[in-house]
Length: 258
Image (cartoon, rainbow, N blue to C red; front, side, top):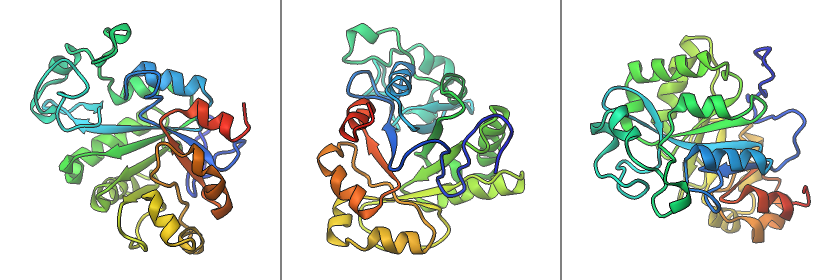
């Protein structure tokens, strides 16, 4: 794979020039900045994250915004469901709730995140709503990814496999191969149709062969564990391909990389 723009090849979660396990910044660096803000993503970039993970919802007027919850209540100074609000209404809110020094931060659009994150860093998009099951939504997301030159540098994630598979199908129709990741709390052997597995970390202790089995099927593994530093030894022993973390700088140091 390759688009000639320096983006990493993602077909099997391969990031050229980076060491495994790759460090995936969970909503940016949410220990030192408000989650899912440009400040958090910039801090994660500065910390040396290999992958920036964010959450994606769709506004009432069809824009892709990076926010975890279905409602703005927890992370902004507003109230209401994201899907019932326009982009202008959401942009009027502060995304620095509980962080006085970040009061000017706003909920970013996907385009703003693409503009901030360097091309050599993968962007992982967790699809948070069933809006992504609609073909037209998938088509628009694929178009936004392609327009940003990120077709080889994005991975799709969801707890609902049908969401990532729906968008992946639209990508394939447009000649864009977007790897699909499935996150799970309970299923030890997920069904096929996804390239990346995100099992809740206790599953890897209950079944130490999980990673071996996944690799046999050609599926890279990133444990669902945003505070992984005390368990890094085990994830490295199992051969996990990436680790999720709330504080990518601390995790890089725990891996002896900075």
